Image (cartoon, rainbow, N blue to C red):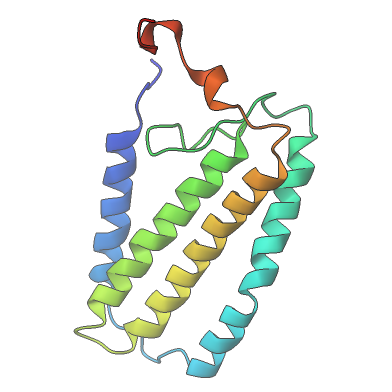
Length: 154
């Protein structure tokens, strides 16, 4: 059985990530703000490294010949199209980070953990966007994806 639309499975996983982060016990020790600053300074390096990895994958014959832009309806476990995997990982980081930030209303020590997770999700998302831009030779154009039945009659 092949799943055609992954939206509800993804939303369930995002909800689970948010709820588990929200209900996570407060850490014994908060992350020092200096660590948060150093991690955020390394964010551009993360984006560039992921984008270079995607560029190298675009020339690997084991991956799909044509990549499509990821959506929440696409299969997040399709390793033949790495943009879907990065999109899913970024969304999970966002959901967990938002849960931790929301949980910071109860325990202040969760705030830095949540901000780091949100920054990681943002970095993964930016690298997927940069990788898609670098791999334009591999990306499908919107005209290639339109089906003849979906076009209006002329």
